[in-house]
Length: 574
Image (cartoon, rainbow, N blue to C red; front, side, top):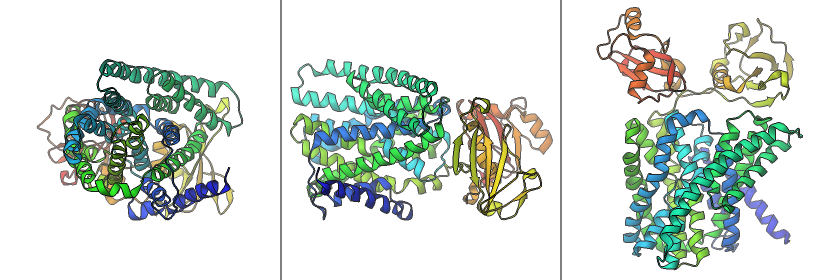
């Protein structure tokens, strides 16, 4: 092997990683930085590297997307499916068809193509990209309300089979001039969803059993999960199913079952997912020839802007309006139709099949992804905050260490650094309210471990070690939070000064606070108020305004609000 190639490849990774902090400073998606570095190192840039092995690129891209989807699936909580599954599946199926059709109309006019080729471009760019969505949602410090985040994550993880089906069907129609391709394409759709869904769920349970039944060196568990996930992915593809759907569902099952050394698995897979994204976007940047983008910049920009400002919003409104989304939620979901690696990978199919205009299709898809990352990716976080779709979130622990002992159950040792204004004034441990079934293991100060006595005062700069279970992590993170949040995300500003139980009656609230509610009967509970206003799927942060009072959902259990914040001044409605 030529050492120059490995040197150049390693330097590209180093440059991309070193430049990644620019993402937060200038509001640029980090994936865009990786893509630009690949383009600069390509044949049109100073690097001068010529890379046109589309078959190798296709294999690498599929493996990288598999790793990214596995990691994203493991971080998707099953609870989110109650509010996000149905709308996300409609958006991932009907929405993909609508997007492909709308994009085809614009592409036929903008690029002066025949209908089948225009439909092929529409199909290729019809799906949102899981890599881009997961990276931006999880990497920007955004804690969106559950209805929005669940819909976006599940949609991006499940809409690939429909886009692949449309792409392969149209490639077959163009290559065979429409002879007998329709029936085989429909059978392929059934196999993609059916085999992919069954294999993903079965594979997930198999991986969980395997990881829990054998004793390994701790560092081998993440590698076992990664290798088993890729095995499910490859086997599903070999059977004609959707490997993307299968490996995402495998990750969902693993992430929502008790698995030995799970915190370590997640920590290692976070690094693997970043490595996969780095390699994927660097390679795609190398694969494109920037000089060939310029001739189609005008037509590509027309299609990209139509996709962002017209086609995606119309699709979202048409498919999600029955599910009880608020206008600002629909607006944000419409904006976050991020295109990323998947459209570029799908654009490799026409090249591998040797179709006419395949290079035009590839460069058009690449240009649209570039515009999407620049326009939508750079504005997503500011827009979420402007539309006030964030909800208060506690800090994650600095480190989580599984105890891996039968007597400890699923307890872990969690380390929380105390920081921010919340901890400038010392507080005694006895004055702090922790969730049940937790205990302070120790306090670290200036490299000294202090015994957790009741009268011990802790303040900014200390690190508190806690024994706790993953189930109480959100409450524990809030109790030890020191993050600097905007004023409107402060606990009292967001939820109000009073905390009530969800089963409290409106009539009781009227008597205690001297308020009259004319809209609803006094015998209904606060939880029922939210259930009626949200079509049965309330989430933390939902509000119900009753005259001079705003009720804010503070905690939920399944589809029931258990804790409610009460704000006396409706002008502060979030």
